[in-house]
Image 1 (cartoon, rainbow, N blue to C red):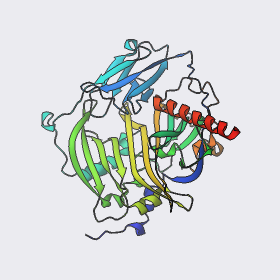
Image 2 (image 1 turned 60 degrees about the vertical axis):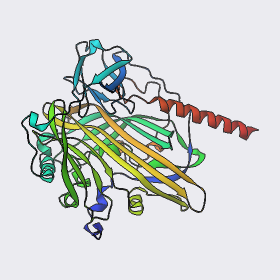
Image 3 (image 1 turned 90 degrees about the vertical axis):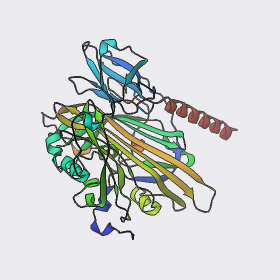
Image 4 (image 1 turned 90 degrees about the horizontal axis):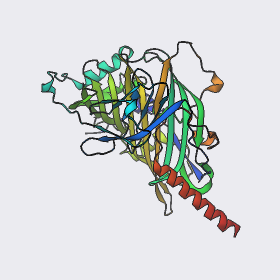
Amino acid sequence: MQKKSIMDTKKYSKTLEKIVAFLVLFIAVIPLHAQNNQDNDYLEYSGVVVDASSERPLVFATLSVNETNISTITNSDGEFSLKILKDMPDAVITISYLGYMQKEIPVLEFTSENNSIKLKNATVALNEVNLTLPKDAKTLVKTALKKRAENYVNQEVLMTAFYRETIKKRKKNASLAEAIVKIHKQPYASSKKDNIELFKARKSTDYKRLDTVALKLQGGPYNPLYIDLMKYPNYIFTKDMIDFYSFSFAPSTTINGKIIFVVKFKQLNQIEEPLYYGKLFIDAETSALRSAIYNLNVENRILSSQLFVRKKPKDILVYPINAAYRVDYREKDGKWYYGYGNVHLTFKIKRKRKWFNSTYSLTSEMAVTNWEINTSNEKLKNKDKFKKSTIISDEITGFSDPEFWGAYNVIEPEKSIESAINKIKRQLKKAEKNEDS
């Protein structure tokens, strides 16, 4: 079957406008000085969430403090760090993960460190709950999109979130930037876009000293924010673009004891341009999208490269070999809201006519740790808005604030980041000694 181009529709060019990356030369690393001081009004609990049978770490599991908007999420090793007020001794923590039975644990049962939380798998057959699949998967997706004003928080919301951006050369960390941000979230039915205010940030790299090629990401925290499919369906499933996909049902699952329809989607074979494929997890009762895990089709190197690369040296060839996305939603009082977003990009970089071939990966993730309805009608001034063209690792000044963490919940840092930074620091010291000699 002959491939069909959709470029003339002008919809495709907008599909990926939220994610832009470009190449520049040179990387350098600055020393790590931050201290993990804790506010005296808070207690911190850390540990790991694992599968009860295999003890495999559960990545992106959610830990929420009941009857509050406080939450955090586990990292790629299943580890977590949760901070709550000392005056909440009766607090109960709910731990949940896609396809597993949720667990509630009183905070009094936690120790300060080494908590191991085991969740049981919760797969269920539909005939056991007297629930049948809708006849058409595509219609179910359209229903979920149509009911976003009904199912999601349709008011202005102020969110506190933790953002992390990591860049790796092969498997070694080359750059780390982290920030606490305030998201000025607009109603889900509104066409207004969300805005971000940078509250506190730090980094462990500087792009001036290492003589190699590196990726930089524009937009920082806007990247995981704009994959909120319920707020920005126009990036993937516009009324016209949705017809470029095929939809089908995968085996259903459960989240927190509720039946979830799993819808698989992929672009039609006759479509030439790179679109998406993945899974949507839709609540059987309310048609609310609970989670989405998907990828960009990067088989066409030329076209997929054009979607990401905004600037690069002339003698460099670059193309994505993986572009993966995940968005999770959380619920309170019957309304859903954006809780976590993750963008993971992997690029192959080659230098023309030279023996140079390297793989870089970039992860941009953000977890909402607290939120409140904007009852005071707080407005963000233009001068305080984080610009979508900003490269966050170029703007922030490094690990200069010893009180950075304070009482804010963050994604527990991975041990590999610390060791990688130390290794690069040793390399720089060695290079300096060679220069002196």
